[in-house]
Amino acid sequence: MILFNNMTDFKILKSAHLKNYKLLLPFDQKITEIKWGIYIKGMGQLEARNISLKVDEGEFSNKWKIENIQNWSNKTNKLFVDYAKLWGFLKYFHPKNSLGKINWDSVLVRHIDNLISSKTQSTLDLKIEEMLATTGGITACDSCSYKIADSLKLNYTPPLEDLNISSKNLKHLRYILKNFRKVNSYHVQTSPRGTPNPSFVNEAAFSQMELPDVNYRLLTLIRYWNIINYFYPYKYTLDDNWQNSLSKLIPMFVSARTKAEYHKAVLLMSAAISDSHASTIKGISIENVLAANRQSPTIILPMSLVLKDGITYIKDIDSSFAEKSNIRRGARILSVNNTIIDSLVARLYTIVGGSNKGFKDSFISRNNLLANSFVVKGKVSMITQSELKKNETLLEYNMKDYIPFFRKVYTYKMPNFSRAANYMIRDSILYIDPSRLDTAFLGNLSKTIESLKTVIVDFRPYPKYQSAARLLQILSSNKNSGVKFQWMDLTNPGVMEKPVVQSVVGQNKFKGRVIVLVDEQSLSQSEFWAMQYRKCTSTSIVVGRPTAGADGDISEVALPGNLTAYFSGIRINYPDGSETQRIGIQPNIKVQFNIKDELDGRDTILEEALKY
Image (cartoon, rainbow, N blue to C red):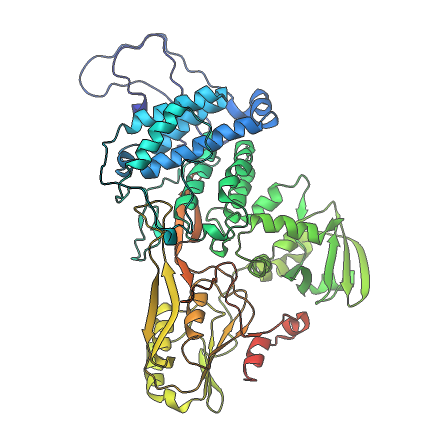
């Protein structure tokens, strides 16, 4: 079933002579029939005559395409931008909406249809009036004063600025803002996990929609945009002003008339917040989006590629393909089938969410996205470079010849740990991987820690929270203040709470040095602990490469089409206010990536740590 609608939103309470009622059905090629009927709810009689059902092509007609894609103007765009902002303002600032008594998504879906049909300023003002009528009036609050301390305005944007609407509507909206009361909202709550990051558990995913129609696609954008606008603690770090992003994204969602185009628009939207927690969207395959957005058939090259600092290397290659092509591991790829690799990387950067370039390179490499992004017509031509010598290759290509290699590369395997979770590297130097520690080891360590001179803690794998917390107590000398938390005030949209510094009281037994290992795959909790371990003794240092730059517990947002987006829900800083989001944890000792070391299986970060 694609959709069930009993038309309660239309409030048909008495006779209606020759009246049209319009229902929006999300388009899906799986639809084979539409069943409909009439029934009465409650007591009484029902008489219906001359009933007919008309199915309109809607956005899949050429007329719609010309009017709403080819002729989409800046003026039209501005109408939708203003509507999106005001819909979000009333969702989070009007007291009736905070109770969850109104289906606010349904209001938007109906209004978008009217706005697309007319695209006039008068229609926008009429829709605003309808929203105000739906929410109803509010009583004056003499004690209310919408004033915000400057220290809490880091992410604040005045909600009623730069709007092209009637003075009557603007006056009404300003009255709502002036009399705003801080209350708990149905639409945003604290996380069920007990952390103070925002949770949006009451947002509908409309899971029955394979491809949401334009109304629901715009609901996706407008819902997400307003959540980021009011509840993203790192909005101030964005390269582009978030207020300007709507005008860029709206045309993409309007014109996305296939599932792949819709998914690509969602990826672009999520990537716009530059957050490594937003690198994936549950329900979207980046590989499928890449394949569907090309006109010609695509190939997967029988190799795994590593992207680092703008250079694409071959990390692994099928032996028979290497023999035919004379291409070896470690070579640089410059182009494939006339596609310059740098241009492909630039396109991937736009749809891969990431706080910094290092994380994006790592994400693209781990998912081998560059190896399955090329167009082929029976042959493959490649330009590669080994040292200073360029190599041009042209050969027949059949993917079926390399199935065993693809299975090896693309089949998920449990991590193959090449070393124990903890072991003595040499006298008085202990290596620890907090992702695999057990309580028995930590209990013994707390009794013997004084005998050690150096403890190396590896935060490149993702750690266990309780293990990392207990280990920090064991290693810390006296009171350790390594991080400062700050989160959004969920009762006051757009405003932050006062920051809180977290301190850890250590055993004060360990007198040696702590060395923390990190790289571009160190994300979230790995970064959180690296910040604190850096401060646990006076001689602690961090060795490796800058981290992913996404700290703070994850918040989730359900989106139409059964999708889920993610973002960093808490702001994390050093106690002195120094930033880590997007920047990452910066090592004291930096270790440069080298493809030869990678191919040889050397752990150069650990090797560097052992020098200190």
